[in-house]
Image (tube, rainbow, N blue to C red):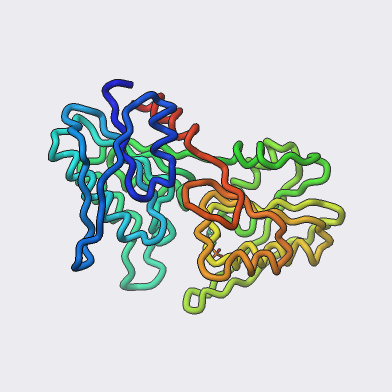
Length: 296
Ligand code: R5P
Protein backbone atom coordinates (compact mmCIF):
# COMPACT_ATOMS: atom_id res chain seq x y z
CA UNK A 1 0.00 0.00 0.00
CA UNK A 2 1.91 3.02 -1.33
CA UNK A 3 -0.22 5.61 0.41
CA UNK A 4 0.36 4.06 3.85
CA UNK A 5 3.37 4.36 6.16
CA UNK A 6 3.76 2.35 9.34
CA UNK A 7 5.47 4.09 12.23
CA UNK A 8 7.08 1.93 14.90
CA UNK A 9 6.89 3.50 18.34
CA UNK A 10 9.29 2.39 21.07
CA UNK A 11 6.64 -0.04 22.35
CA UNK A 12 5.74 -1.81 19.12
CA UNK A 13 7.46 -5.06 20.18
CA UNK A 14 8.20 -6.00 16.56
CA UNK A 15 4.57 -5.75 15.49
CA UNK A 16 5.09 -2.61 13.35
CA UNK A 17 7.82 -4.32 11.35
CA UNK A 18 5.72 -7.44 10.74
CA UNK A 19 2.62 -5.42 9.85
CA UNK A 20 4.53 -3.18 7.40
CA UNK A 21 5.89 -6.28 5.65
CA UNK A 22 2.46 -7.92 5.49
CA UNK A 23 0.64 -4.87 4.12
CA UNK A 24 3.62 -4.00 1.88
CA UNK A 25 4.08 -0.49 3.24
CA UNK A 26 7.06 1.61 4.24
CA UNK A 27 8.23 1.22 7.86
CA UNK A 28 9.61 4.20 9.77
CA UNK A 29 11.28 3.85 13.16
CA UNK A 30 10.87 6.93 15.33
CA UNK A 31 13.84 8.57 16.96
CA UNK A 32 13.30 8.83 20.69
CA UNK A 33 15.11 9.75 23.86
CA UNK A 34 14.49 10.81 27.40
CA UNK A 35 15.65 14.37 27.94
CA UNK A 36 17.85 15.21 30.97
CA UNK A 37 14.81 16.48 32.88
CA UNK A 38 12.91 13.21 32.31
CA UNK A 39 10.62 14.39 29.49
CA UNK A 40 10.04 12.19 26.44
CA UNK A 41 11.28 13.33 23.02
CA UNK A 42 10.30 11.76 19.69
CA UNK A 43 10.91 12.60 16.05
CA UNK A 44 9.56 11.03 12.87
CA UNK A 45 12.69 11.16 10.70
CA UNK A 46 10.89 11.00 7.34
CA UNK A 47 8.20 13.12 5.73
CA UNK A 48 4.67 11.61 5.95
CA UNK A 49 2.65 14.42 4.35
CA UNK A 50 -0.59 13.23 2.65
CA UNK A 51 -0.03 9.65 3.81
CA UNK A 52 -2.23 7.38 5.87
CA UNK A 53 -0.04 7.05 8.95
CA UNK A 54 -0.41 3.86 10.96
CA UNK A 55 1.26 4.36 14.34
CA UNK A 56 1.99 1.15 16.26
CA UNK A 57 2.46 1.64 19.99
CA UNK A 58 1.41 -0.85 22.66
CA UNK A 59 0.65 0.70 26.03
CA UNK A 60 2.38 -1.76 28.34
CA UNK A 61 4.50 -0.61 31.31
CA UNK A 62 5.69 2.08 31.66
CA UNK A 63 2.21 2.94 30.41
CA UNK A 64 2.32 6.68 30.97
CA UNK A 65 5.59 7.08 29.06
CA UNK A 66 4.23 5.03 26.16
CA UNK A 67 1.00 7.05 26.12
CA UNK A 68 2.96 10.31 26.06
CA UNK A 69 5.16 9.05 23.23
CA UNK A 70 2.04 8.06 21.29
CA UNK A 71 0.59 11.56 21.66
CA UNK A 72 3.90 13.09 20.59
CA UNK A 73 4.06 10.81 17.51
CA UNK A 74 0.52 11.81 16.57
CA UNK A 75 1.38 15.48 16.85
CA UNK A 76 4.56 14.98 14.82
CA UNK A 77 2.58 13.20 12.07
CA UNK A 78 -0.02 15.98 12.03
CA UNK A 79 2.81 18.51 11.85
CA UNK A 80 3.95 16.94 8.56
CA UNK A 81 0.38 17.10 7.20
CA UNK A 82 -0.54 13.40 7.45
CA UNK A 83 -3.74 12.58 5.55
CA UNK A 84 -5.13 10.30 8.26
CA UNK A 85 -3.89 8.82 11.53
CA UNK A 86 -4.67 5.21 12.41
CA UNK A 87 -3.52 3.83 15.76
CA UNK A 88 -2.56 0.23 16.37
CA UNK A 89 -2.56 -0.14 20.15
CA UNK A 90 -2.12 -3.87 20.78
CA UNK A 91 -2.38 -3.54 24.57
CA UNK A 92 -4.76 -0.80 25.65
CA UNK A 93 -3.68 0.41 29.08
CA UNK A 94 -6.10 1.73 31.71
CA UNK A 95 -8.87 -0.51 30.35
CA UNK A 96 -9.55 -2.06 33.74
CA UNK A 97 -10.45 1.33 35.24
CA UNK A 98 -13.63 1.37 33.19
CA UNK A 99 -15.90 2.77 35.91
CA UNK A 100 -15.81 4.71 39.15
CA UNK A 101 -15.44 1.77 41.53
CA UNK A 102 -15.02 4.19 44.45
CA UNK A 103 -16.24 7.79 44.68
CA UNK A 104 -13.65 10.23 43.42
CA UNK A 105 -12.07 7.86 40.90
CA UNK A 106 -11.73 8.68 37.18
CA UNK A 107 -13.02 6.53 34.32
CA UNK A 108 -9.49 6.28 32.98
CA UNK A 109 -10.13 4.32 29.79
CA UNK A 110 -12.78 6.75 28.58
CA UNK A 111 -10.48 9.70 29.21
CA UNK A 112 -7.65 8.05 27.29
CA UNK A 113 -9.88 7.21 24.30
CA UNK A 114 -11.34 10.73 24.21
CA UNK A 115 -7.88 12.27 24.21
CA UNK A 116 -6.65 9.99 21.41
CA UNK A 117 -9.62 10.92 19.24
CA UNK A 118 -9.39 14.63 19.96
CA UNK A 119 -5.72 14.58 19.09
CA UNK A 120 -6.49 13.28 15.62
CA UNK A 121 -6.77 9.47 15.65
CA UNK A 122 -9.51 8.54 13.19
CA UNK A 123 -9.29 4.82 13.79
CA UNK A 124 -7.95 2.58 16.51
CA UNK A 125 -7.15 -1.13 16.22
CA UNK A 126 -6.66 -2.93 19.50
CA UNK A 127 -6.44 -6.49 20.76
CA UNK A 128 -8.84 -7.99 23.29
CA UNK A 129 -9.48 -4.87 25.40
CA UNK A 130 -10.59 -5.60 28.96
CA UNK A 131 -14.19 -4.52 28.28
CA UNK A 132 -14.96 -4.16 24.56
CA UNK A 133 -17.89 -1.81 25.34
CA UNK A 134 -15.42 0.77 26.66
CA UNK A 135 -14.38 1.47 23.07
CA UNK A 136 -17.63 3.34 22.44
CA UNK A 137 -15.95 6.24 24.23
CA UNK A 138 -13.73 6.53 21.13
CA UNK A 139 -15.67 8.71 18.68
CA UNK A 140 -13.86 7.34 15.60
CA UNK A 141 -13.84 3.91 14.05
CA UNK A 142 -12.50 1.03 16.14
CA UNK A 143 -11.58 -2.56 15.45
CA UNK A 144 -11.20 -5.20 18.16
CA UNK A 145 -9.06 -8.25 17.47
CA UNK A 146 -9.72 -11.45 19.41
CA UNK A 147 -6.83 -13.93 19.43
CA UNK A 148 -8.88 -16.96 20.56
CA UNK A 149 -8.33 -18.82 17.27
CA UNK A 150 -4.56 -18.38 17.67
CA UNK A 151 -4.73 -19.91 21.16
CA UNK A 152 -6.74 -22.83 19.77
CA UNK A 153 -4.04 -23.41 17.11
CA UNK A 154 -1.33 -23.36 19.81
CA UNK A 155 -3.09 -26.00 21.92
CA UNK A 156 -2.61 -29.17 19.97
CA UNK A 157 -4.34 -31.64 22.27
CA UNK A 158 -7.05 -34.24 21.98
CA UNK A 159 -10.35 -32.36 22.63
CA UNK A 160 -11.59 -35.23 24.82
CA UNK A 161 -8.74 -34.60 27.24
CA UNK A 162 -9.37 -30.87 27.64
CA UNK A 163 -11.59 -28.62 29.72
CA UNK A 164 -11.52 -24.84 29.25
CA UNK A 165 -11.91 -22.89 32.48
CA UNK A 166 -12.88 -19.21 32.82
CA UNK A 167 -11.22 -17.83 35.99
CA UNK A 168 -13.95 -15.21 36.47
CA UNK A 169 -17.31 -14.14 35.05
CA UNK A 170 -15.76 -11.73 32.54
CA UNK A 171 -13.74 -14.52 30.93
CA UNK A 172 -16.75 -16.77 30.25
CA UNK A 173 -17.25 -15.49 26.69
CA UNK A 174 -13.61 -16.25 25.80
CA UNK A 175 -13.87 -19.70 27.42
CA UNK A 176 -17.04 -20.45 25.44
CA UNK A 177 -15.37 -19.31 22.21
CA UNK A 178 -12.21 -21.34 22.81
CA UNK A 179 -14.14 -24.45 23.80
CA UNK A 180 -16.35 -24.18 20.75
CA UNK A 181 -13.30 -23.93 18.43
CA UNK A 182 -11.60 -26.84 20.22
CA UNK A 183 -14.91 -28.75 20.42
CA UNK A 184 -14.46 -29.42 24.10
CA UNK A 185 -16.14 -28.69 27.43
CA UNK A 186 -15.87 -25.45 29.42
CA UNK A 187 -16.70 -24.32 32.92
CA UNK A 188 -16.06 -21.26 35.08
CA UNK A 189 -15.44 -19.98 38.56
CA UNK A 190 -16.44 -16.60 39.96
CA UNK A 191 -13.97 -14.41 41.80
CA UNK A 192 -14.05 -11.44 44.08
CA UNK A 193 -11.14 -9.03 44.43
CA UNK A 194 -10.65 -7.00 47.58
CA UNK A 195 -10.23 -3.51 46.14
CA UNK A 196 -8.04 -2.40 49.04
CA UNK A 197 -5.59 -5.33 49.24
CA UNK A 198 -5.86 -6.78 45.71
CA UNK A 199 -6.43 -10.27 47.18
CA UNK A 200 -8.56 -12.69 45.18
CA UNK A 201 -11.21 -15.03 46.57
CA UNK A 202 -13.27 -17.58 44.68
CA UNK A 203 -17.01 -17.37 45.23
CA UNK A 204 -20.08 -19.38 44.18
CA UNK A 205 -17.98 -22.15 42.69
CA UNK A 206 -19.87 -24.91 40.83
CA UNK A 207 -18.39 -28.35 41.46
CA UNK A 208 -16.67 -29.84 38.41
CA UNK A 209 -14.76 -33.07 37.99
CA UNK A 210 -11.46 -32.33 36.22
CA UNK A 211 -10.13 -35.86 36.73
CA UNK A 212 -7.68 -36.88 33.98
CA UNK A 213 -8.29 -33.61 32.16
CA UNK A 214 -5.87 -31.03 30.91
CA UNK A 215 -7.26 -27.66 31.94
CA UNK A 216 -6.82 -24.51 29.83
CA UNK A 217 -7.55 -21.38 31.86
CA UNK A 218 -8.25 -18.44 29.57
CA UNK A 219 -8.36 -14.72 30.45
CA UNK A 220 -7.61 -11.35 28.84
CA UNK A 221 -4.84 -10.17 31.20
CA UNK A 222 -2.39 -11.76 33.61
CA UNK A 223 -1.03 -9.09 35.91
CA UNK A 224 -0.20 -10.36 39.41
CA UNK A 225 -1.14 -13.94 38.46
CA UNK A 226 -3.47 -14.24 41.45
CA UNK A 227 -6.57 -14.86 39.33
CA UNK A 228 -4.84 -17.65 37.39
CA UNK A 229 -3.29 -19.15 40.53
CA UNK A 230 -6.66 -19.36 42.31
CA UNK A 231 -8.33 -20.95 39.31
CA UNK A 232 -5.45 -23.42 38.85
CA UNK A 233 -5.64 -24.35 42.53
CA UNK A 234 -9.36 -25.01 42.15
CA UNK A 235 -8.76 -27.21 39.09
CA UNK A 236 -5.95 -29.13 40.78
CA UNK A 237 -8.02 -29.68 43.95
CA UNK A 238 -10.71 -31.17 41.73
CA UNK A 239 -8.45 -33.67 40.02
CA UNK A 240 -6.92 -31.79 37.07
CA UNK A 241 -3.72 -33.15 35.54
CA UNK A 242 -1.90 -30.52 33.55
CA UNK A 243 -2.98 -26.86 33.78
CA UNK A 244 -2.18 -24.32 31.05
CA UNK A 245 -2.71 -20.56 31.43
CA UNK A 246 -3.59 -18.64 28.27
CA UNK A 247 -4.10 -14.88 28.27
CA UNK A 248 -3.83 -12.22 25.58
CA UNK A 249 -1.82 -9.69 27.55
CA UNK A 250 0.93 -10.92 29.85
CA UNK A 251 1.89 -8.07 32.14
CA UNK A 252 3.20 -10.60 34.70
CA UNK A 253 4.47 -8.16 37.29
CA UNK A 254 6.75 -9.13 40.19
CA UNK A 255 6.64 -12.80 41.17
CA UNK A 256 3.63 -13.50 38.94
CA UNK A 257 5.11 -16.38 36.91
CA UNK A 258 6.58 -18.04 40.00
CA UNK A 259 3.19 -17.81 41.75
CA UNK A 260 1.46 -19.39 38.76
CA UNK A 261 4.02 -22.18 38.45
CA UNK A 262 3.69 -22.88 42.20
CA UNK A 263 -0.07 -23.27 41.76
CA UNK A 264 0.48 -26.07 39.24
CA UNK A 265 0.45 -24.19 35.93
CA UNK A 266 2.85 -25.87 33.51
CA UNK A 267 2.61 -23.55 30.47
CA UNK A 268 1.91 -19.85 30.15
CA UNK A 269 0.77 -18.80 26.68
CA UNK A 270 0.20 -15.19 25.61
CA UNK A 271 0.56 -12.93 22.61
CA UNK A 272 3.23 -10.40 21.65
CA UNK A 273 1.07 -7.40 22.58
CA UNK A 274 3.52 -7.19 25.52
CA UNK A 275 7.12 -8.50 25.58
CA UNK A 276 7.61 -11.42 27.96
CA UNK A 277 10.57 -13.78 28.16
CA UNK A 278 8.98 -16.18 30.65
CA UNK A 279 6.10 -17.31 28.43
CA UNK A 280 5.26 -18.67 24.97
CA UNK A 281 4.15 -15.74 22.81
CA UNK A 282 1.95 -15.98 19.72
CA UNK A 283 2.42 -13.30 17.06
CA UNK A 284 -0.70 -11.19 16.57
CA UNK A 285 0.68 -9.17 13.61
CA UNK A 286 -1.14 -11.19 10.93
CA UNK A 287 -4.56 -10.42 12.43
CA UNK A 288 -3.65 -6.74 12.76
CA UNK A 289 -2.44 -6.56 9.15
CA UNK A 290 -5.70 -8.18 7.98
CA UNK A 291 -7.78 -5.63 9.85
CA UNK A 292 -5.75 -2.76 8.34
CA UNK A 293 -6.22 -4.14 4.84
CA UNK A 294 -9.98 -4.49 5.45
CA UNK A 295 -10.47 -1.27 7.38
CA UNK A 296 -8.57 1.44 5.45
C1 R5P B 1 -9.92 -8.80 35.47
O1 R5P B 1 -11.15 -8.85 35.45
C2 R5P B 1 -9.10 -9.34 34.34
O2 R5P B 1 -9.89 -9.95 33.36
C3 R5P B 1 -8.04 -10.31 34.82
O3 R5P B 1 -8.69 -11.43 35.39
C4 R5P B 1 -7.17 -9.66 35.84
O4 R5P B 1 -6.72 -8.44 35.36
C5 R5P B 1 -6.00 -10.54 36.19
O5 R5P B 1 -5.27 -9.88 37.16
P1 R5P B 1 -4.30 -10.64 38.15
O6 R5P B 1 -3.34 -11.42 37.31
O7 R5P B 1 -3.63 -9.53 38.90
O8 R5P B 1 -5.12 -11.50 39.03
